[in-house]
Length: 478
Image (cartoon, rainbow, N blue to C red):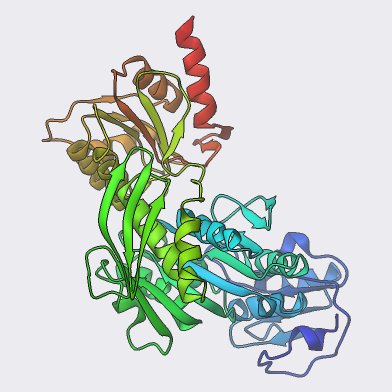
């Protein structure tokens, strides 16, 4: 592809010589003959510092935001902002062939995106998915490295979807991705908001920055679907030109409302009320399943799908790995794996389990290292307040000492009457919890969810809690 085609629509400040481009990248490790290199300044590394070296490696040109005195430099105002449209042009702007549905919020994005995909497929549509657990082109599965991929991988996935005949793409859009411009220039048919609570302040630094990053998604959409039970549900779309469609459980003035909600161990039932009434059954238990399925239904209806079809298709949906996932144990207690790793996420899952519990709720959890430390005592307090027993252990400690993270958690548990046990090694913690489980207990393994690894200070190890539970069961039989 010609350099001029790749730079189409991007304001360039200087003259340049057109050339044939074989690849585009902002990763200096991937530069080879015929590559267009985009110099992006990150928190640790600035691509501008290796621009000359990239030309020596065979790059046809470098896109930069300051004059480097190089013969093949292309000056733009903001090279990070230019990266996404450059990648879109390189892959032939595949997103224009798709109806994009973007989801943002602190909790619920993954499950809701899977529900939307399944609803659309149950209505006869071919759908792609981009998110935390995996990326999908129809039924084909691709590994997910980030919730929202970098612009190159994102546009490449769009290309695969368009070539495979997908009509829709449902994607999770993280606050970091929005702040870093990974979806710059991407137009969403529908953007949906789930909720907003404390998370990722280690990256955004302030609540205002976090909120502003989430709000960016709604400046790029035709229709905004938003949860008006959340205090930020209307604020996030305030004064924006997009069409706004609201959903809620408690706000009866919303466009779509869930009423007469009933909880059971096998799912939730409610009446979906708008200008008509549909009886919804979602086969995923928990209060948040009401919100997730209601959001998914509202998105589908905002896209123009048939009301009766949408209501019926929700009953055919299935759960998501690592989201209120019941692990087969053949015991008189229940083991549930959930990704809850924020204060609000932990409160939601335990509160939901309380509504269906016949015995104790035993919550096993930790907190991630090198992340927002302020949420650790908050999660400790929530777990102690809502559980009958807590097992405090490691999550992904990363470069931090696990004992120090646990001390931060325990600071929020002091003064509570809930008994707890500290077992630093997560595998041993799971074994202890299973050995000491009582009849009708719900043992909640919170924090890891779909992850199949654990990031320790010294290494990253394979760690799949489903496998650990199965291994412990075998050990306990001996």
